[in-house]
Image 1 (spheres, one colour):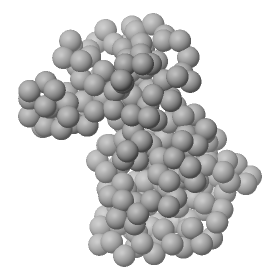
Image 2 (cartoon, one colour):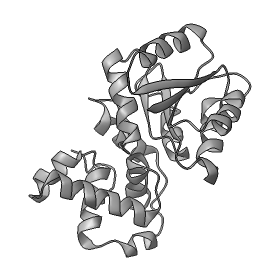
Image 3 (cartoon, helix red, strand yellow):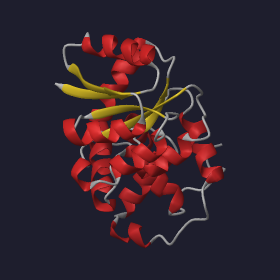
Image 4 (tube, one colour):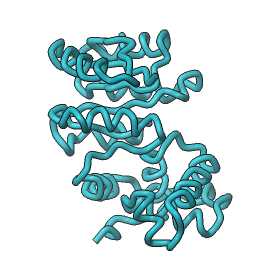
Length: 221
């Protein structure tokens, strides 16, 4: 059973998401919070698998709430997905850097929301279909100058290659085709790379790819 928590100051949004998710046989809504402060407290109490977190909330916004959750070692298994009204909300970039596993627009199709919750539990980054490369490109344009790539020294040449392809927005299936390997092999390379770098999920691997200089703005074509 996938346990999901909802954090949004709009009662109707929480009610709609809750009804949709609770209708799924493998999903359970374990709590709701109207602001970021209550969201953090509830996450520590309930330890959900996924938190759907609104970016703009009173008392404590979703960005700071995400930092507190992802920065707590005791909550390492909790995935945070940001909810936003716009596909390229200016805060999405900071949210991903803060540890969010991705984002969804609030008017996403019901089946996409359910698919997204299941996907993030599997370790996939949630970057809405159709805007993945645009989001990554925008993130890259806003990112700081690459830091020293010492952290990449532990990676094999193939793992660096895979990390670069992840940073360019390719899925496991696309990576497999590019490298002429099976999707399972591609997924294994991605997983090993994340373990070696100590990143939470695929979204953080994208951030590392840019901040290390392995992928640079303008490479997406």
